[in-house]
Length: 430
Image (cartoon, rainbow, N blue to C red; front, side, top):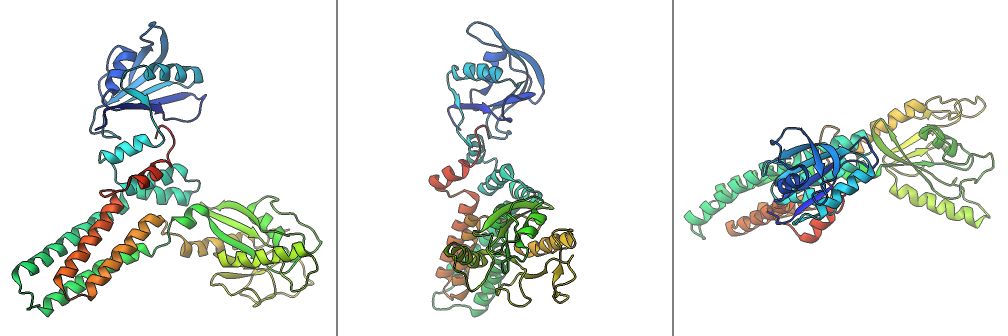
């Protein structure tokens, strides 16, 4: 339990209709007593006048809610002051709180950090909460809230239970068998159980991570000059993000535009037109950057001649300028679009959404970040060593290392620098 008590504005920016100031720690109830002259009943919204204890001047008329620890969000005594949302009101209340012995202004993420330290959430739930606060699309929100609600934590708990059972079996073998008398049947049974556990972990670890979910799916528009890439980009994002001109080679650099389609984040990249011969050194640089963008693309929309696009697993043939009748059409595998008349634009968006299901975590599931995936991969390496071994001591040691990975995932074994990085993602008051 922390000795000091923290406070901060936990609602939105001011001015606003309401402002909520949270107070957490051993002196939270003392702070309420100082301001209101009484401590209202817990978990009931109470209307109170709050005063400056120095000059007894009225600060505000507020709703105060008290939560007695440890059954609170932070695991400590917690109070909420629901104030009128004027800047001067909040400043005056915070000034009084600062003068109360044992109280100080909270640092970024400190409320959530205390919740973690007091066992009110594990590290994965804290990760999910951070992602939830920064979510901008529906897909991001769903994945984040599933993580914040402890779905991944429950999965880790199930794995931990299985590891403990296996470790107990290993200990029994070490206690009751001779070192020179290894029962092959018992080893085979252990290997089968380890393989089943490894398969379960691998299934989760191999799902797409949060990277694409948060940064967006990279969709590169590619083709020769003056084929309609910039016009198509503008139609897809719904605004004039790229310059459109009849002059070939207008696009010299990669144009990056972020947009959400049906709750999925995409990054559309308009590239310079590809051609072998160009006397313009700037255009040559643009073409080199276009080819480099292909390497980072999740999806390529190819507007050039059919079959001449770059080799890519998610290349979509686009038959552009479908409104014109005097140009040669591609085969039926291509999506016919006209950025000017919007023919096929909705079909193309649905195609992108369909491909996104391959690149993103399940819509009803959670997404791992790189830290979580790395620890699961490491756990599976230890399991692989255990599976290959016929030595119960080596198997037991590898199972101990797997438990260590799980402890790091939940935060039972943690490094302060990593915690500082995580909780630094939160705003003041969270």
